[in-house]
Length: 322
Image 1 (cartoon, rainbow, N blue to C red):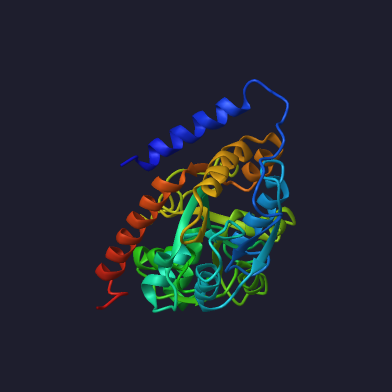
Image 2 (cartoon, rainbow, N blue to C red):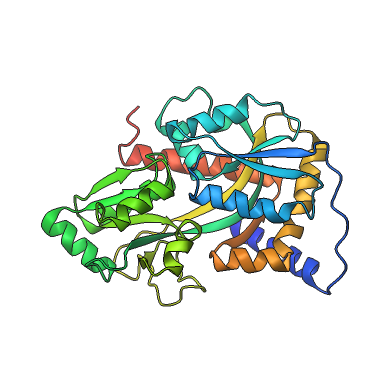
């Protein structure tokens, strides 16, 4: 099995090979559909929504199609998974994969699960961060924890089956506090409650915070990655802040089961080219997204392994009891 680190090296090599030397861009690859729908369980402004909308602006330079984003909210992602699982496996519909679609399947009994759809490719690794309102009382993560010990506190995260919720729960356990963690269907709703002071902090992703960060309305307190972000070098990791928690999100695509081999091949060629695109690279680098291309076959293995390790964690912590 190819390790995640080896995938990263392969991705970097592929991107470097595409980027050097500069050459004229080839015509986009022919595709069997003129319109491709990209589904997300996220609300408008949420991490997956931003990921798809930004990617779709540039993807047409490599795949000859028009890409539209469809928000299918509800059921912690269950409705979106069902929308994908019941679609024709012809390459016209895909879904933005994150850990949420695994967690939803493990923590509930949806009509369709991650096992009913086909992983296509992975595109990025994404950072999870702790943030608060800029004019609020918390300057560091330690301030938040101290408040939670004294007055319990209220923290926000995305839906119960999200990696953000798991990150918040792990931080809560590591800090030994009993903060109330409030779930939201998307990052946009969560942001509102952080800004109005209903919540002490939120756990989210840089892309969905970008507008508020640039407006200096929110402050980053810590990042759940193992290392500090190159774009945010002054922000400590959660581990550096004294709490041994490391979490990192994957972002990719899945389709209905039975995708044609030629469709898979087009996406496997297009995504490395897209990641090497200088214009797009400036955008995703600013969002602290890390290129992490994984082709279809090893991505399917990665998803299976991630699901197994997640189920083990949930059983060990008592979240799954049978």
